[in-house]
Length: 326
Ligand code: C5P
Ligand code: MG
Image (cartoon, rainbow, N blue to C red; front, side, top):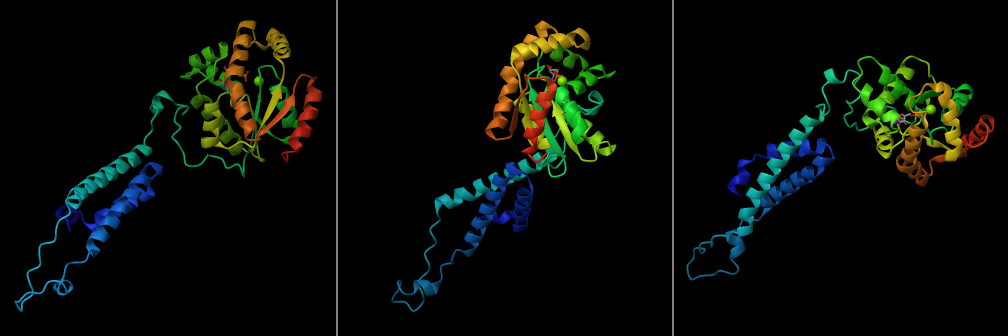
């Protein structure tokens, strides 16, 4: 056995392998490396030691004593291989330790700058809510497509809790002391998408509250105006809860514009004016439609034409969601 290999006790190899195996996917290659190292270790230990008997058939001499065994030829590769392996394995072990330590550390701003915890979203192995216990339906459609109106009907008849991402953002914008107030205000006025960490956390907080305060015994949620961007969709389903399907209200721009301008007369919303409306339409086409297309490819979209009067659209909605067992 090479002296450097002998200097690393078997116990240390075992510990490295255990740490690697109990760690995340980044560590699995290190686990494989460790098991490879152990294999090499045991192969080296099992390598046959040259014996006199083995040599006796081919090396006779006139002397009665067996001839001296020629020194075993050292494989130059073997000499270089072990130190290299040891250095890599120890390096991997160190890396795993560091990675494990980091996993437990917040990566985003410290709490004092983020009292609502809107940015503290460390990656989680499983979402907060299981889709077996909690039903989430995403409700999408252009601005003015009638999402809010249809959600109100569904709440009445099916006992959903309605969470509008836009309403939650407006409430956070107005919350005294919010670190994100100005950012949200700017985004809304310009029809831009608020960074997903903020919106996803607001939704998770609202879901948790609704479940804990007993107002949603069925644990059924309509998440309205969300996800408006692919990153929101992926993050939410990864850390909060996978959605059952997407309810997509399809409406032509002229009709949506007419509705929004009408609503703007009384809504008091900073984005119900023609300049903001145009920007919101562009964001919807460029950023939000790819989300609908993504779910469509997965067969998870219920598409409803939303040009007719609200009651007609609602009837169509009821018929369609039946197909998903709602
Ligand atoms: O859905 P609603 O029309 O109320 O959204 C108003 C605005 O809130 C959007 O134009 C956008 O600026 C912001 N928003 C967002 N991400 C969402 C939903 C709304 O950034 N998922
Ligand atoms: Mg709305």
